[in-house]
Every structure is written in C-alpha cells, then in structure tokens.
Length: 89
Image (cartoon, rainbow, N blue to C red; front, top):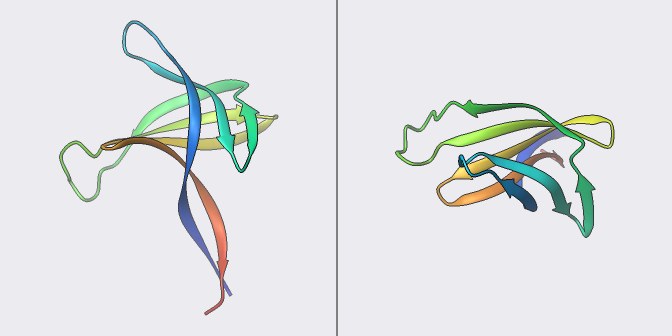
C-alpha cells in the first residue's frame, strides 16, 4: 500500500483587493464550506517544468484551528488542495 498525493480542485470564495491581492475567504469542498480563519503565509512555489505563465501560489491558512495548504494555479487560474489517496500496489 502506498500513499499518493493528488490535486483536488475546489471552489474558493475570495476577496480581491484593489492592489490585485487575492485573499481566499472560504473553501467549498465535498458539499461543505470551510471558513478560512487566517492566512499565515502566501508564497510562490517553484515552477519545475519552466512553463511560462504556469506559476502557482501557496497559501498557508488556518481552517477550523488546523494548518492547511491551499494552492492557486495561474494558467488556467484555479484552486486546489493536495489530498492523500491510498494506492494498492
């Protein structure tokens, strides 16, 4: 048995500031809504494939008292979380 991390695309309600900053407010996933209590850090993640316009930002958030990571892909612009999935080898 092996654990594989997969991208799971989610809906996110955001606040867009006039300076262009995007701040996620709520994650909608598996028929539930999760309020983001606070955003602890926003940082780019490395683009190993070096594809122009495919940058991804990582948002480290607190949701229901737990640290969670939320990602925003740039092209196409969409949100995802990383979900562990058991694989039987």
